[in-house]
Length: 351
Ligand SMILES: [Mn+2]
Image 1 (cartoon, rainbow, N blue to C red):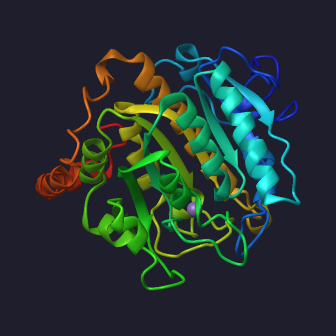
Image 2 (image 1 turned 90 degrees about the horizontal axis):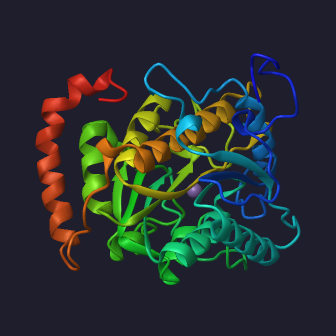
């Protein structure tokens, strides 16, 4: 939609004012809403997030002073509307989302899912696995989301990565979780993840280390595997993102998250989600605004990864069995880099 003709606040809101294509075929990326919050354990309301994020995304361009050519000159992206999910049944919603997202990937190259609560990342990973096999995951979140079922529910927003590991959708040794912190239901709630070889960068680790060093660890851990990126907005401090279901103080800043996502353009991204915005707790709209910016950033990184020869993905994954050693080596190497680069990275977005 041309802003020369229609001001950015006009017309029904699609994500970044992209074309609305309810049954998209042949696109590089389809933005799709998953308005569902039946998996929330505390504050509800994420079902209203796709609309709120689209509303706040109107001002975001596909170009920027630090982005070179416009993102939408490089990749073809449309807004596929929302998946119609039953608000009454988690099992039905999970099946519906799995079928819809699988169909999207049969007809298009990738999707950006706007949640919804985090439970539906499992549906997304099932769809991505059907197309690409086992994937690596970059998971930004205050919570590990590898919890067991609770309250009689098999699936909830604290379980997607446990089931993704159990179902073999994700290589746990290629799963990196960043921003983990806060109060978990049991002191051992990270044991499952750590016991399966998941790399966890806590919020405290993030304070000690530089984003560049963490990005290097992510690059080494993910290797050449197809990469799914899942961003729970509660990875960001509630000062920047108050409108979310389970807020946890002490999180990353908006700038730190956007800076960290630069690594995605150096890997092989195949799908994305931004989840857990709860607009009722977001009176000024800043949480939705940040979710929109993160979504736009992920589209930009996809364009970099798929169209820029200078950012070709890592050649090959680490040999089987080498992951643990290499991760450790990477972390040691990274700490040295961290010390050198902490200052120059602070103000640099694109390095
Ligand atoms: Mn989560």
